[in-house]
Image (cartoon, rainbow, N blue to C red; front, side, top):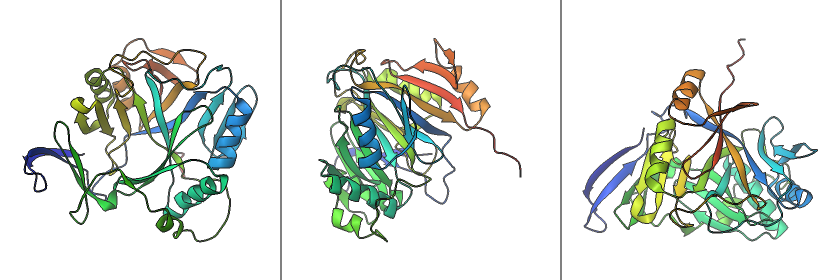
Length: 317
């Protein structure tokens, strides 16, 4: 579990909170993981082509909606019917994040984006390497490579934040990512689809209120990460060595209402608990639970819908 202490910063001289993550060697697996993110889109064919041909997801099924992901798991489910693109000023999805399982797999997606000529924002967070881009409807997407081995801690005050790398060097956490170094990790030049192990690794949301969001996601079982109400942001881990699994910010405005029907938006995302007991514990903290096919549908305080389910039990050998 991540830990937070308070002391004087050796970089700024001010009193700061210092957040450290569990070590890779000592951390247990995440207690909560993610399944498919469901999106409403304006043009099903166009959005399918984006996720399949630009990102590299496998088209797993099609019909009244389209499921894309790896050969064995759906990561993104696209639903037609939106008549307007993504609208600012509302709560809902900030970005779903596709996490690549290795440097070479991350580099392969980056190469696809560059060859497609898609506009991207390469960002080095230290604890991860990230590519930000927009889908055809204007919904932000993040492609991520987790790199907690490069990370030492985060120092933050009311209005400041420094990411300290493993060598003790202070970083902004928003430096431009070196794409040449990323592409140097490719072992071969190919346009293969994403591999098994590619997954939804975190979900970042626009919310209406930081405190109620904090209380809700802590109640579900997420662990403390950053708590920055003055910057309109809160962040959570799930017990593992990568402590950025749910993020919520109020950057669309405090009190922002849910994105309206008929716009490109998130229908819901899927949250998987490690066992039925943890799922039942989470369900005991929420209200207005609706049983649906595949799990239990709830809404967070900002109106974002979540399908709560348990991981299937392993098959005995």
